[in-house]
Image (tube, rainbow, N blue to C red; front, side):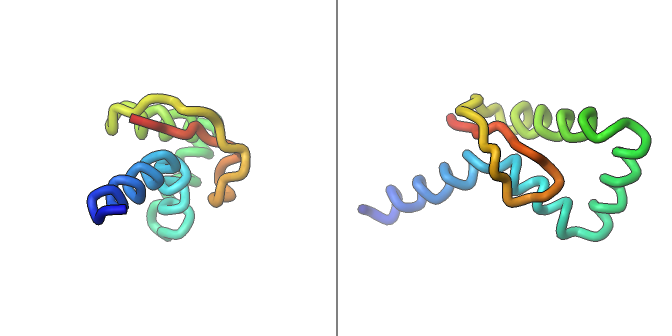
Length: 84
């Protein structure tokens, strides 16, 4: 495997699970977590989580590639996997 092939593999793997990474970032960032809890109180868990998931897909122009039902983040029950 070349360095470029390895780099592509690593980045594509990260991209595939980017929604989980975003929720982990919220979970481990005190300020983001406070803001998240405020938004969930105002708008409801489903609305907030769905909006975040859609925004990830839209901002990065990603395609859906299945569902993961074992996220690392405890903020979500499942999430959409993404591909190019």
